[in-house]
Length: 258
Ligand code: BT5
Image (cartoon, rainbow, N blue to C red; front, side, top):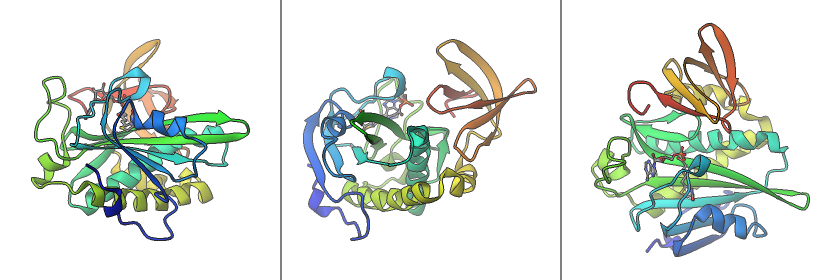
């Protein structure tokens, strides 16, 4: 079982002031939403999610004991229009931690971390408003110690264990993630996404790629060319410049998953 007492974070890290760890839950994002009256920075972790969620109602496979299924409760005072950038802030923070540990990670805009063309981590940011307070839940799913995946995921998912060929110390990784997220999140709150967008772009594997853009009422190919200072993706569709907000679309690779 995940041991919260083994998580090491510095005193000035405002994330992870308290932890709620459960053996089984439907979704840690739902746990965080149900407990949005708790203090900012509370972290919800579960060994197993029975209804782990991806974006747009997709399912997130959350096998018992093998992953880091975690949600962080945030209470930004910034307007709701900034909420979608938090997905990107989390992605950058996570990508940096993997790289620090020697895992060759990149960000697939907006919410995936990929290694060798496969997904090691997905991020689901959700928000809710109660009274005049906005709560944002940053849900992070990391495949830590999977040695294989079921048929449906085996071509597009990977894990820390598969990539590094060593067991992932999940408590250690959670500590690093919270420290990293804390730093980038503060920068974002104080100076906006523009202050970290150049760093994001360097690690964004989507840029320069031909992508398929899929949303509720369209499906087309385009070239991913840039990221705005608000974290939107700029694409070129046959000479037409289109700006995509992360909440609206799914961007897929033409040749494989990335
Ligand atoms: C995501 O959605 O990638 C967001 C995943 C967020 C999961 C965390 S876990 C803690 C918190 N609690 C929750 O309930 N959720 C968050 P999306 O981009 O829509 O990707 C979903 C797709 O990823 C699925 O349709 C599968 O193809 C694939 N997938 C599902 N489980 C996966 C896994 N464990 N590893 C890699 N890919 C997976």
